Image (cartoon, rainbow, N blue to C red):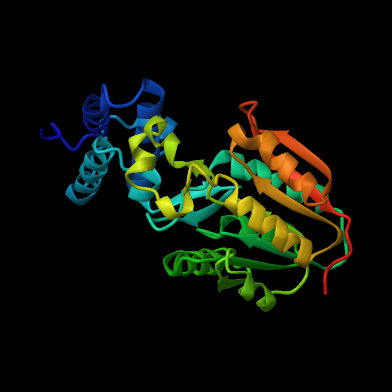
Amino acid sequence: MRIPSNKIKDIVQFFRNELQGLYDENEIKSFVNIVMEEYTGLNLTQLLLSGDKTVSESVMLKIKFAINDLKIYKPVQYILGKTIFYELEIKVNPSVLIPRPETEELVHWIISDYKDLKKPIDIIDIGFGSGCIPIILKKNLKQSKVYGIDISKDALKIAKLNALNNQTEVEFKIIDILDREKWTQLPQFDIIVSNPPYVCESEKEAMHANVLEYEPHLALFVDNDMPLIFYSAIADFALEKLKPNSSLYFEINEGFAFQTLELLKIKGFSNCEVKKDMQGKDRMIKAVNQLTVNS
């Protein structure tokens, strides 16, 4: 089908009609607002007041391409190549996960815990992806030196771009956290944070197509028989690299909150705290290392 005209009101109506039955009304409204503002520069109020305003053929084509992508469930963040995370623009593409609201909550927890600290601190994010976590931490905890490690060279490219665009200095490295021999390349830390892969293969059937077909499986999934493989390795890394009385923060699979908590306690962490996200789900854990750092 063709868009009836290049008037805003006709484009918006066409947009809504094309997505009917594919998404609920709130999602459709959100997609219309996001895409139209990106390509026309008009916010929701301006769109409502500009129904008879016309747009160029090139803008219409961009909108039509976006609609076609949405019809095959491509995430709108990948369509536009960016998202907003903790009030900063973060570039994204299918080589990195789209940052989630619960990850914003995890970052906010860390910032709240350390915002009044004046001394320099060292922070590492394990599995940096788009770089959103280390960039926000550096932006808000200016006294910190921030590192990030990941195994994806494609992720490294976009993380470096995001750090540059947001004028933040983060030291990114390509390191597989499961390769313990590489741990010697890293210093001691005051904060270790990670949002590692934690979705079991068995959970795929319950996931939406926009996640399953477009987001990187390497950053999402773990084997059913090893759901805590990354948590165990990162906890061991923390026992070696976390300074005494310093903190480890995880985003977690709500279905394994108890098991993750017990894992950390068994390894010797204290003051372990599970935190719920805004949806009331167990999605974050903080643990303190009170052991002497291994030499």
